[in-house]
Length: 563
View (cartoon, helix red, strand yellow):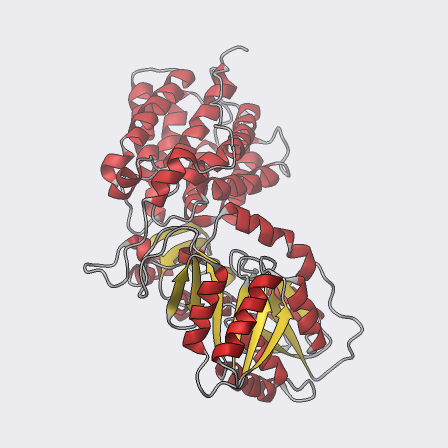
């Protein structure tokens, strides 16, 4: 193919689409690299999904309209950005597209200017820029592009100079970030950014695209290095590291541009990995923090309106296999229709859950609407709102059943004319206890108060498998260990088998005054393990009544409620 002297509209569109396709192919490898600032392993996925939104928006623009194409790239980037890496990438794409918007034939000088604008915009979006990340790789690529352009370099010369310098910068990221050096990997976001320059070189000069490593289903050497990087134990001395910010909070924010500096400062006081991009009153915002409520209140205090709030517990994210299993269950709950056979009531209940057994159990207790959700799959504001709107009542009690979902649930009331009251349940056993107190003929405020009191009276525990090495107050945790978790206390038991972890957990939460233990079995629970656990209760807590229900939930073979 002939070498292009100019990046025209067609070449720009080809470059963006090639970039999207290439990131898709490399997503798994990028996910493996992602060890900073928290080991959430989703950089490649977030960048690919961000670019999916860019291409989808670009496809709505006339392919010969350069101005509209650049606008579409900018808007698609803003609205489709996911995760810290996706938000920064969106600002890079916006800076680049905004610079070439008035230039349908981009030569070397203008390409260099566009890269500089991209780097500048990315740095400005981050409250506390950290070197050794995608920011560094983009900036050093842009600087090399300018040097080449100033020397009279052609478009291909400039792009290649940027790519060469970017590769050097990427290789140097472990020297700038100790967490990368400890893991023996380079920055994942920076590696993803280089694929943009690879894609442009492919379009303008036919240079082959890098070949993605095959996904053989194993973590490989990068995964082994990743396992060596763990969160510092909370009791360890020293200042809080950014990797110990537990929650990722993202939302779109309607806020006057004049207040955005104050907003960033407010977030700076409560978190890190802060990225805020946008303009003209609409912003895409991302922060890692330990204070979910405060992250939302900062916007409200400035007169802003957060929308499409997403909260992720970064410490408890699980591996890809678990996420796939959760996704397979989506049709069970969220795609299930509102139960039309239920009569209209004064107050309906909408509950977040996963597992077909729990959906059936909730239906038996009068729940009118269910939304898939739980660990690794927090439902969006839109999903909750849609179900609230569809139930047969003007008043609704909402049961989030997961601490990460509570902040999102609490936004629903402001988005509907219905009266919505949130009972802040953090687990399925709490929800079951609350539903025993549910009165569909009472108004939402009164019945929610009764349900909340019932939920608080339940001691809850859950058993799952550790996905990485860690520490706990009851001893070290190795990947693959079974751990018992107690509300408010964290890890309460560690054992090599699920039944041993369950019995140690029950020994802690089933007191002398307990009357009822509810056991909810997940898809990984076996009849033999369940029998062993029930027998232990009979031997050691003989006075309690034991009820076993099939929940069918993923990730957690056993959920326990003690009343």
